[in-house]
Length: 156
Image (cartoon, rainbow, N blue to C red; front, side, top):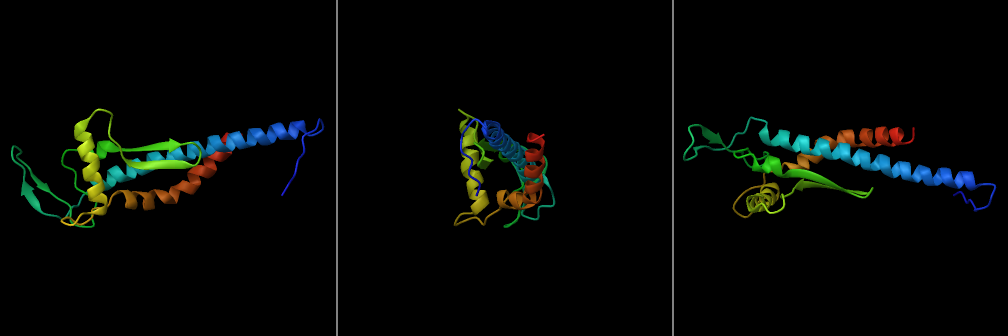
């Protein structure tokens, strides 16, 4: 542990330490931003990427048939609402929230958010079709690299 007492001789050191802390917070926030973008991109890819091996069925009013996902696979996309709802939010320099988020005043997206939760963890009638946890696992590989690069960039 280092103790630095404020006096005229070491005021320059105090200013540098305060600036260092501020630069570190900025680098961490930028690292969270890059990680959040990776998470959203990866989750969207998991949803749209074939092959899905679930049931094949016809949707009224559409010519093409829809292939659903099997239990344990990421959900298959039909309307794109789940993909569009994926977002992240950075809170300070110590928290990143990632998941489905509704746009204000959009009741359809409110329903999508409830459905997204059911897809991720499952229900008594439907097995889970996780897409957030696998996205976190895949994006985790780059997280450390993002933070190191952004903190170093902030200190230059």
